[in-house]
Length: 100
Length: 248
Image 1: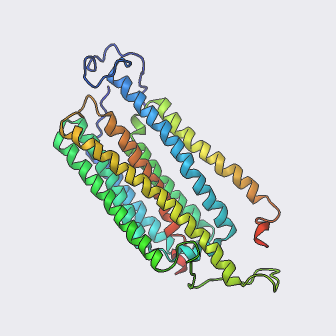
Image 2 (image 1 turned 60 degrees about the vertical axis):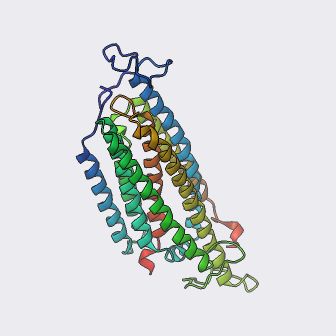
């Protein structure tokens, strides 16, 4: 039970997928999609991160408490970013100190 | 996902008497789960550590999007993409070294660790070339900073005549991008250096065959750290290098 030696094929496939996604994000970056630029770039980056977490970092074999710890880390990061932007995005003038 | 018990395993007696089993654990499996959880708790603090910088990036970029785009387009995305591929490959070799331990292939453990370290050094070498280029072009924030690239600047609404020249104002904001660039990639590079150092410590025990199918916690935890640093770069690459790609 303690051994979950993943077959090497899974690692090579993960590696291949990460390379393809890297190429995709580079190609997409050459087109101006307006507001979607960041959405697409971040969607690809999050997909890559999930692949690394799930396969390379063995989260799929980890105990629930370990998965919960990992999720909690990113959840708190989301709180940090979301609540801070709540402030900045709702100010009357975004950056008064710039003299705008 | 099946559940993994962390209760003292009765059926799983493989760990008892194993030299790597510390006295306060019942089984090797329990010991491994404890170290993995502990490593993840550390990684959570790392998420928040880098998270603060990513947040800073988001706030300042939303304030000065044109400046950030102009600054980003001076970075060489080809070098960034190359380094991304190098890091992804190093994550593969890191995972393969753990795989080699799991199937008791001692020499392959050492081989993959060395390849991982070399790839880490290649990454840092490319980074050094990029940093040198930034110094050469006076793109390092500070008194020596010079911004002579195109500015895409438009007159600010309600700008008064006594306001400082637009170019200066633009260059000041461009410097914020480069400050973030150096802090974020610099902190990431420090993590790479630490990772290579830890990998070096694993070489001798690996060569002696200490890591095998029964016990390889140090490899596993170092792998978690190495892959995490990879993930940080996966986000840094598009945010820093590709932001201005379509503007050039």
